[in-house]
Figure 1 (spheres, rainbow, N blue to C red):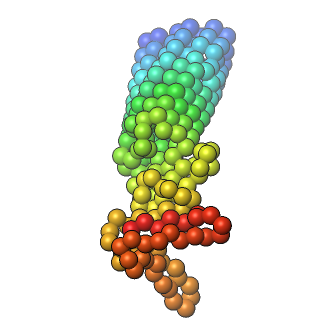
Figure 2 (figure 1 turned 180 degrees about the vertical axis):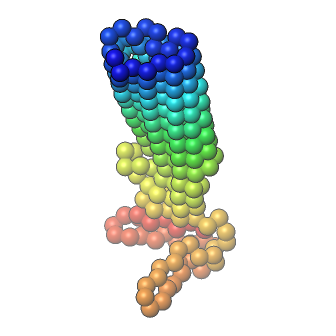
Figure 3 (figure 1 turned 60 degrees about the vertical axis):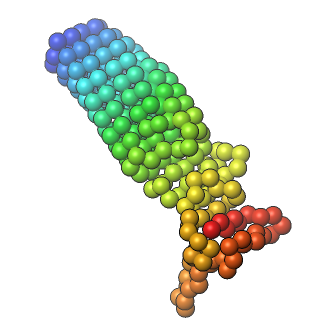
Length: 231
């Protein structure tokens, strides 16, 4: 009881469970004991048998999943997912190649498009993180932005200007204007040595930090070099 099914083969295998919604050809077709689930669109959640608390809205969304707690909104969102759980995919073909990866968030057209087994990635923006395949724990925010390699983990790329390695990495670092930070904080203008690297400002004024020579010396903070200035 309390089930709604509309479409050829929608909820066609359901025997005893309640509180499922299946709208579309073969939506939740294999479901026998999973509940509650929402499947809207052709082949949405079509192979789910026992998975619970899934939401699939879009043609071929969560088509092959067999587990619980996934959210897919958009055609082909989380399409290949089998046992990955606690994923959120919002947008056309978001996380569409994911099979076993869990705990990832993809928002935007084809975000995390090729990710298969990586876990705990966050990608926001059209094609954000689209080149990642097996990398994990990455954060990508911005249109068509990626990490350094398809297998990279623990990287940050925000807006194509702020880069870094997350606290999960052995050497957490932040780079501004460089995607390969050498130390905990590394800034680069990409211009000549007289171009300001940083500005420090308070209520009475400000000053710019820049190098006066083409071959600046290292700046040492404390007993080890934690600040790299690169012109």
